[in-house]
Image 1 (tube, each protein chain N blue to C red):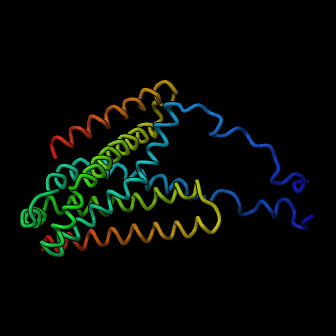
Image 2: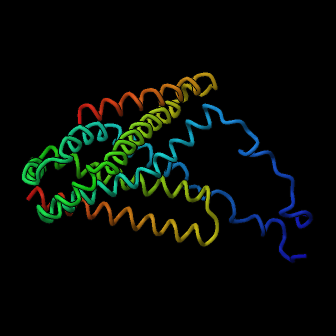
Image 3: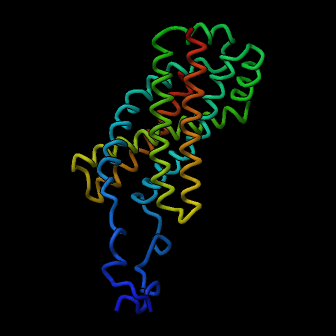
Length: 123
Length: 127
C-alpha cells in the first residue's frame, strides 16, 4: 500500500500537449515531400548507373542539385519525426529512449553527409 | 481504492483477434514502408558520397546499387516511396475531414495499392 494519493499518482502522466505541433510538423514536411518526391525520383533516378563524369556534371547544375539537397534534408527530418512516433508506439522504457536518440543522430548524420556530398559535387 | 487491481485490469481485445482488413493493412503498410525507406535513403546518400569522393569509389558503390540485389532493393524502395507518398496523400485528405467512412477508406486503400504498383512500373520504365 502506497502513501501516494490518487491525485498525486495521476499528475504529470497526462498528455504532453505537444501533439498538435508534432502533427502539424509532419503535415508540413509531407506536403513538401509530395512535391519533392516526383522531382527527385525523375532527376536522380536516371543518373543511377551513369558514368562518373556524367553524374558530377549533372549534379553541378542548380536544379538537380537543389532538388536533391531539399529531398535529403526534408526526407531525413520527416523520417526522424516519423520513426520517433513509431518507436513511441511500440517500444517502452530505456530501450525506447536509446532508440530515439540513435535514430535522431542517424537522421542528422545522413542528412549532413548527403549535403556535404552534394556541396562537393556542385562546387 | 486505485491500488486495488492495478495492472491486472481486464484489457479490451486488441489487434491479434481481428482478421486482416483493407483498412488495417493499408495503414500499417504506410508505417512499414516509411521505416523500410531508411535503407534506400542511406543507399542514396552513400551513392552521393561516393560520387563526391572519387571515380573509383563511385564505380564500386554504383556497381553495388545497380547490381541484381541492388536493383531489387531500389525497385522495392521505389514502390515503398510511392506507397508511402500515397499514404501521406490519404492522410492529408483525411485531415480535411473527408473520406473517413469505412467504405471510402477501403476504396482509398485499394487505390493506393494499385496506384503504387503502376507508379513503380512507370518509374522503372522511365528511370
